[in-house]
Length: 103
Image 1 (cartoon, rainbow, N blue to C red):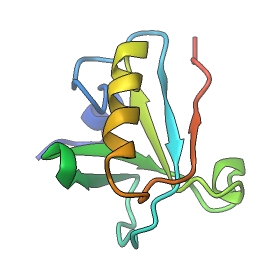
Image 2 (image 1 turned 120 degrees about the horizontal axis):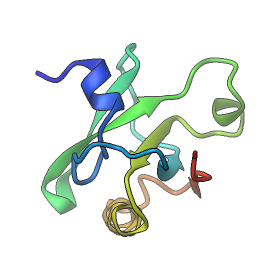
Image 3 (image 1 turned 90 degrees about the vertical axis):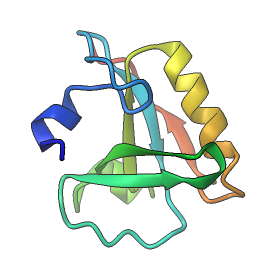
Image 4 (image 1 turned 30 degrees about the vertical axis):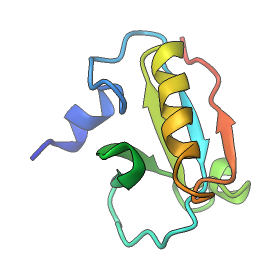
């Protein structure tokens, strides 16, 4: 089982180490999220995989705007693959927003 520290340091899509520049997607999830931790394992049945997402914190701007999850990616290519996978999940992730790259 991966530690939160390990999950925080890797791309949710390809699992490579994140570099100094982090990209990603904020998303709402129409399924109930029961996790109370920092990270939540998200099952993507159509893509036959599971990925990790950071849970937005109560009172955060992201949660106030309706984004429950933040997916960190290492590159534009992984961000695009993640977008494709999320779009296959029959409207489950209707609300999505690109995260600004964090230098």
